[in-house]
Image (cartoon, rainbow, N blue to C red):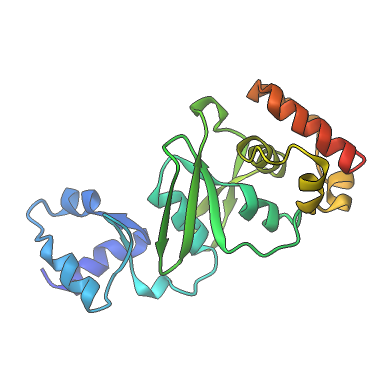
Length: 205
């Protein structure tokens, strides 16, 4: 098999793994991937997951790949809070939550970190449309903030809460506090409840 045949079959997937390759061609020579990586025809996203260099520079694909290379997962925490304008900083890492173990990857598309939550806490995300008729699993703003407060226990005092520099206008006008509290109840965490009280006190909610 030559590379052009392979690319014609796999390119529209954007991200593919070796299982998909062997499902299509059971006798596929794995050494082809090694050669094509060396030639720059393919890009490794993580062990066993690949894409094509043409996807570099295309908007949203770094986020899309975050969903694909470690599943189930969705974009949350600092990346989501920055996206919604709830925190001022641009975020270097692409942060997600997952029901799998906590891990991190680095590839040509960025740095990816995944934080583990129990399966019953994997909720509160939407499918955001992107170009090419694809979607990205992305936390709702209320869930992104709760994930952060739950997974980062050092937000347990007023100084740390202030240093998070949450946008007060967003919190007071755009955050759905009813939904936020509804989601919070599902965590059944006294420590989280205390951090929420501190959040409300710090930002006059």
